[in-house]
Every structure is written in structure tokens, then in C-alpha cells.
Image (tube, rainbow, N blue to C red):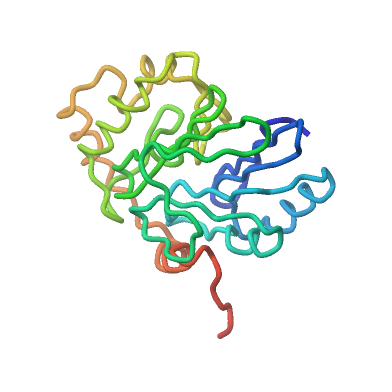
Length: 233
């Protein structure tokens, strides 16, 4: 078991991350997907991991989280961005709030709005878990859930691009077979935002005209409840 394990859901092209302190076996999971709950539990049980926290970067529109059921099964604590209003969460994370696990392992929560009003990124051990805020050679859309193009531009250019260039980016999605990137690479090469003015970025985002996510009407209400919804007809 690595200190950082990346798991991928092919249906929604979503990455889930499992962080483990190798000394204590305490772990943290970021953005789990409901259809992989048993896979996660198998990994946790087979490696004797004590899951301490389950984190969400935002209330997702394209898949349902398994955060609630993971917490029920493992005793972990759900921690979500305060401005996402995910009411069942145990902790509602404020900007710059720190959570700790294992032996001196620290995760810092960063409010990076734009994709959604409440979106957060998480910094841990030279890694940035950027959710849908910053993707590899792209970024999240801004046309629902309180999204705002100017806020996204500032979140990326003023917050995320302020980290050292060697910082590893761990995105919430990728649709092209990529796994990781770096701040330096994205600052210089990201097709949507690298070396672009706010006006340029706004023009690009306004031209996207993306279709409505097929899961949005089901996913967002479920994710505001940590995925703890009844599937009865």
C-alpha cells in the first residue's frame, strides 16, 4: 500500500484518492464514488487501514458520493466545504482549516470557488487535490451551482498557481488518460488559462456550451446528503 493511492471510476472519469500514513495506518479518502464502495472497503480492510476522514472537494454533479456509507462502515469523519452546505457532514471546513491524521500528517483546506461556490482544494505533502477547480490542461465548468468564471480564474491564478512549481496536481477528473501534473506545467501549458488574461479566459469559458451533466438532477441532491439517499421506487 502506497502513501498515496489513486483510484479511477471509468463511468464518470473521476479520481478518488486514498492517503495513508504508513507509520500508523491512519487514512483519508478524497471524493469517493458510490459504485466503488465495496472496492474501497476491500482495500481498507485488506491493508488494515484505519480510515479517519472522508473529504469532499464539492457537491458533485456527475456522480454520487459514497462518503456517508464509508463513514457508516468505518467510523470515519466526513469533512466537507462549509459553503457547499452538505448538512450531514461532521466537519464543515473553513478556508485554511487544517486537519491532521496519522503521525504529523497535515491537510490544509483551501477555498477555491469558481466551479461551484463552495469548491475546495486540499494540500498535503507537496500534493494539491484540486477537485474540478484545476484539471490537467483544463478546468471545471462554471455554469451551475453558483459557478463563476472570474472566481475560478482568481482561484487558479492567485491561489493554486501560488504554490511551488514542483507541486503535484491531483485532479478530480481526467478524460484523456492523464493521472498527475504539476503547478509549473499547468502555469505554462494549460490551454484554458496559462498566460491568459481574465477576458481571454472568460471568452473561452463562454464558448464552451457544454451539455447539462446527465446525473446532475440526481447527484446534487444526493451529494448534499453525503450520498445517504433511499433508492426505493
